[in-house]
Image 1: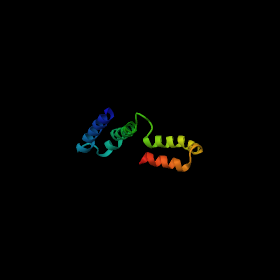
Image 2: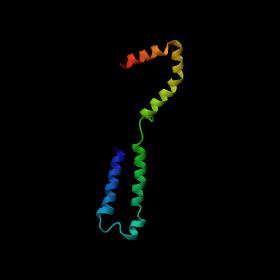
Image 3: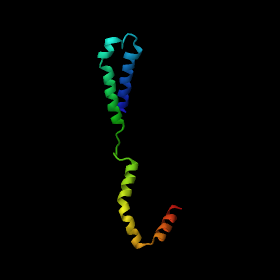
Image 4: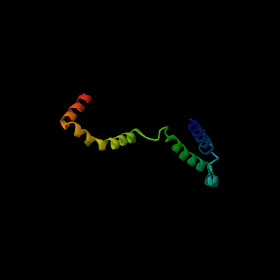
Length: 95
């Protein structure tokens, strides 16, 4: 939230100076100004911070990890029960 507030303040200050100010942003002053560079740099920082998560794994990655870890054990199930029985149990579970 703090980064969002800072981004808002920065964009408001930039707009006030360069867009609303009719004298600013003209000629050589626009070329040598550091304000546009600061806004661009901060936008990269904001995007990085906003994409951070408390847990660095997304749901899809966790699902794939579980599939990869469980897949080698699936043939072992069929050594104890038949494929028909396994499919019937799975059908009962989902219905």
